[in-house]
Length: 152
DNA sequence: GCCAACGTTGGC
DNA sequence: GCCAACGTTGGC
Image (tube, rainbow, N blue to C red; front, side, top):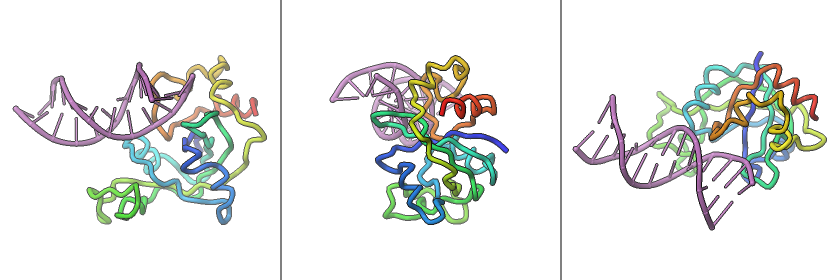
């Protein structure tokens, strides 16, 4: 079982969107980056846990924990011409993009801000704080996971 | 809105 | 396969 961090822009999809879903479970749609796709498709397993991270907003940071309840399968939005995630290059036979289903485990009582994460010397090696990092899905080590839990 | 960093595209 | 141009991400 592994740990992850998954980014979402709260204006597009916030943790409160997920909280309002049936069974607090939803698809993690719209990832259109190959590296992140590979992790969704190949590496995430049922039972893995992930930090839900809000990006591109006033206070970027971790807002909760989710768990993977369905492993990688083709992201339906790539086939939908009406969707902003539509990809004409993709076919049902050979889908390009994948998604997983996530279920809310808990919302943080308060934000674990990017600023706080950057200030913690134990988290210096996190991919999240590395220069130029733009991956929307990334692995988190067990040590980093525990450190962040301790900051909650 | 700015800009650095990175990813993708496409001509050659 | 190279690389310039362009697009996107995301913090500030």
